[in-house]
Length: 390
Image 1 (cartoon, one colour):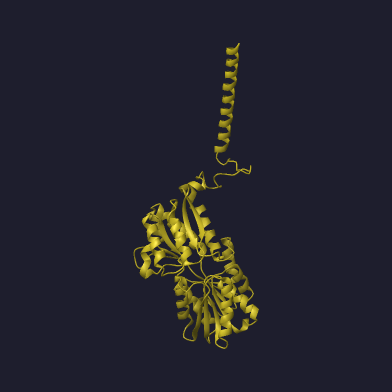
Image 2: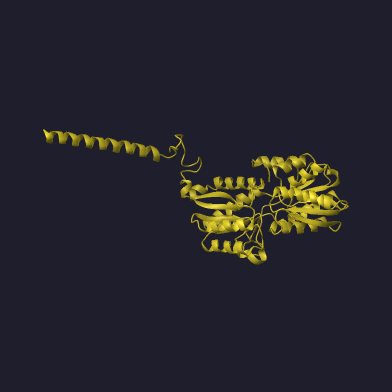
């Protein structure tokens, strides 16, 4: 009787274990089914985003990073380009993903980020906007990353090319000296009598700032005199204070307010509206943040020289992907003259934007590669790429 009970108990245990094993197999099958994973909140959570064709989960993907310097809306367009490149180039099918990371706008913060990236094995490419062109520590960190096999490009703002050109493969962005020159042409066309001007910028040591200010001086001509170059260290409150101080300090001499970085345009228009002296100044600015677009439509900005951060994001990802994959054909298409003087520069282009066709500025005043657009045509271009600014 005891043996019979033991056999009965043994049979019961075996059956129970078999049932549990079968249930476990069914649960595992549900969990591993393509596109049918269940999130912890109980909702369906596809392991692979639509259109990625069975790519690995994000934890298994190598990263291509673009490191921006602040949360300016300028970088929203770069993010859109990055995301479109990731989708259209099918990065996830190739085990890659593209990410936009944010620095705090300082050289120390940039260096810390790069050192952090150096310790992370899943990073295969970094596009960096150099905060200070002459920063040897950042250049050395980029060299260290290159030695580890990470593909390095600069985006938007380059390193000092005379000293540190070897620390990156290429620069992707605006020919900033030409952009500054075109902004100077805007000032000269809008105010032929010239006068004193002040430039406003985040950091004076950034390559794009140096070249734009130098270019503006050449484009504006001898009737214009530089009264000051005011730096705000990417502090928006200080950016507005700088405009206020410039107007107060240079009464009777100041005729033209020049915004060099994207957020300087809203800073200028805010203060000028506050002080009620719009008619005293010509206002010309770089870039087209959403607020700046609103202000030029209201007549508070006379002209903008606009970059193409969308293409910076897109082509930055495109080039770094090709470099990582040893895709020499694509690299050659993007940089056909690499290895020749300035063949390591991918120019994303410039646009001069004016409020309307009544502007005294005309197409023939500008270089052959510069697009000249009225605001309505520019907005159509933004809509094409689903952008709010550029």
